[in-house]
Length: 397
Image (cartoon, rainbow, N blue to C red):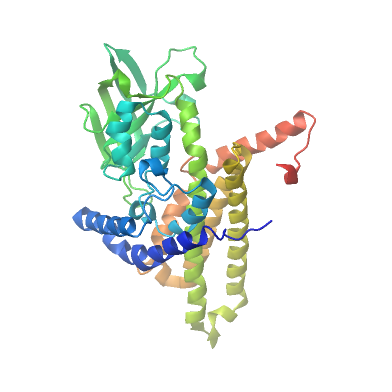
């Protein structure tokens, strides 16, 4: 058994790491500025990534991507995650949506949405979460879509629809089936072009003071053709689960990239600064920060790789995915928090990336399902084994 990065993956992983540290991270202030400056900085990096063969590495080759196998791409995603802009720069922000469309889109939907999406000519957005309800239980979603005269008429309100303000379309989860239908067969996915009449962006919702493109959108009798249904009718939850499972592994690997960056900053700071007559790295409390961060990062990394390996074998890995979503998000929050503490007052300023990283990390414990939901569902699956007379043998699962 080896936990090393495979030799076949190391060259591309190293190339992505160099691209991230030498070009993406220095360009973060320009990309964070917003407006045309930000857009041009992203476009420039995208051109460089394409020229160097680093573009859309996890996308299938038939979509113009690098065709990396799932587990190989997981190792690459770990270093790409050092910056929140890595996905945009390297063309992988669209991966979850591209894979979803690749599996379920009709020929017409592939032409209109998938092909330009894979080339990063357009951005996608995904609408599930709604204000006013506990969206951690998506069977409560209130947005409806009714079939009227060959058109889906969508009524409702969504929020945290990321990048809806720049996306070409939104994949909307809406109830399409009548009352009495099994809740998990009552919802469908519908592709809605963002320029459709009645599609109104109410606001870009700040997240802990950051404007990150998380939009609240009103659907006021939005009409799209019947053929904009994605996949079978009533199979919205099936499609969503297929999208979110591997996506959570990608999130956790990016969390590890962010944690590695914060760890690097913290350890460098401990060598750069002195206090009370000696370098900070000689202080035992500072060494405690290093020890705790190392063990948490390593534990989260190995748990994540185990989940990825099971997905790569074709298993659902629901226990493993539920566990890593909680462990990795908490780990990231803790590591960045310690790095800020080591930086002192400077860690609270924009002079380091830690402030923005900290706020994104805190949001990570809610996005893609809050910790409490993953804890409960994971524990129930484990306890079910005991309820049926078995036990949970860690080495066999």
